[in-house]
Length: 235
Image 1: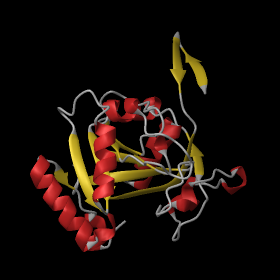
Image 2 (image 1 turned 180 degrees about the horizontal axis):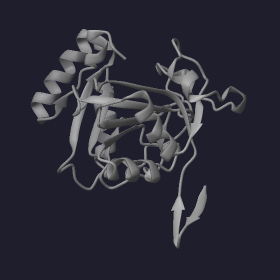
Image 3 (image 1 turned 90 degrees about the horizontal axis):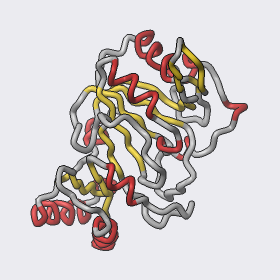
């Protein structure tokens, strides 16, 4: 959506928002930080273990009001439609006090996130995108990008080298050595890992996966990421 304001071209993006809530970031480099989560609708990647399959499809007939989405007590395919200005107004309406915004999905990089992330930074927020790395990352240069590469998924999308290059954090769920080998193959295409956090995250807190992740992180000076929100029972 484009509109003229004075002599400047203002570009906004229509966003389909499945969930919006305030909580604590539970994983990765921002673990423990109070955050506003914005979960966008839509994802064609097709991860078989996905715990947000209700965000995969965008069905226009399921669009509802922001208040109805925020009040949802169960996962559903419903969403509300907003642009970045109205979304920021919703933060204020809801009384959110966190200043870190996590944009997730679904696959958030199906959307051009430059208008939203730029506005948020200009208004004093920090932003983070959590993406599979299968779409071009379009966001403000100040945004912290977490790529959790989804390899050989049902949707047939490839992890983009450009997404890995843009990443501040590469966070990879693992259960076995095969997953580390797949990550190594991806990282071989990245020009440099300097300045990037590489995190291993044990799938489903499995004992064997956790032991492998710990051993590998120590050997390579990588970082262990635990889903602490699942341990303490919050969203």
